[in-house]
Length: 358
Image 1 (cartoon, helix red, strand yellow):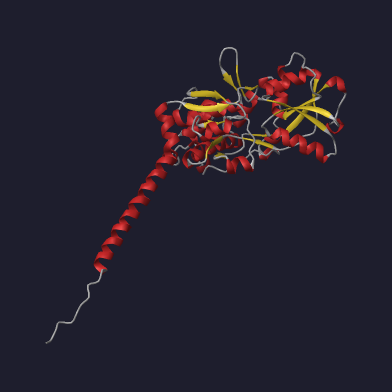
Image 2 (cartoon, helix red, strand yellow):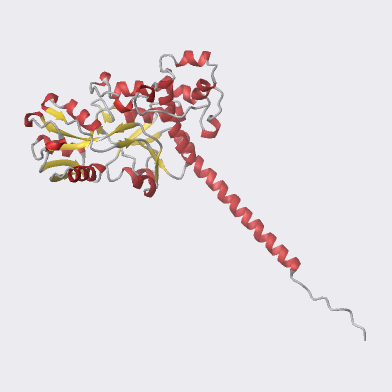
């Protein structure tokens, strides 16, 4: 008997459907992850705008960097940077909640989302940038660790501090820097560890140690607040490089970009000679693409950053350029009299520069 040739049923059609289903599921998953990623990237800008307030972590105890006066007003380089960022996002330099943070809590506060930004004289190191879940966006202040001694000791150099008792703040780069410097120069030291700069300074002034070692900006600021500043000498040696700058979480790229380019805007404005006094005129007659991009007059970067157009113009109009901010907080106008030094523009022999906005 003739039989019809056997045609084995194959799972081809079923497999195709299955693969298609799996493929669609994968596409859906990837699309969902993409949306989550975009949402995460846009999160901080949206949260700050919805809240109407920027939460900025600061030190709170360093004149010239961040300090609250008796009237409750905040002042300092870090403080003014926070205000510049609040201006970029909210067009209001006063829409900032300043959150004093300890050395132990400063990075975790950023990582855990308790603050939107850390502007707290914190040194940029590879270990912190790579392993702490945070990102340093740039350099707001080039600093270096120094040493202060009583002028009555007649010490003129750090190389004369063999067997000295050194007051430092525990948990900071100052500890290892002091150890490294003394070991390199074959000197012995006794480290005296304190929880914060106020306690360390008080111990030093009480004569419990021979020298106080911390960032030179802090030493100058501290000395200026003393009843007799001339009784203290800041030695000429700079024993480390300390790059101080704003810190954000490392999972929000758009927020990172906005913070970084707010800093760059302040620096480039000084380079172009644009300040709070002439920025309105610069806007009205701006023809070069560099100036227009700096002020964001065409709104080119606003949409990408999640802010309103002309955000660069608003920042400079409200806060001034980097030079103005430095002068009123650290320079002669502040009473501290700290010279620009390496914080001068690169065109003036310093290290401060920014990529062009265009």
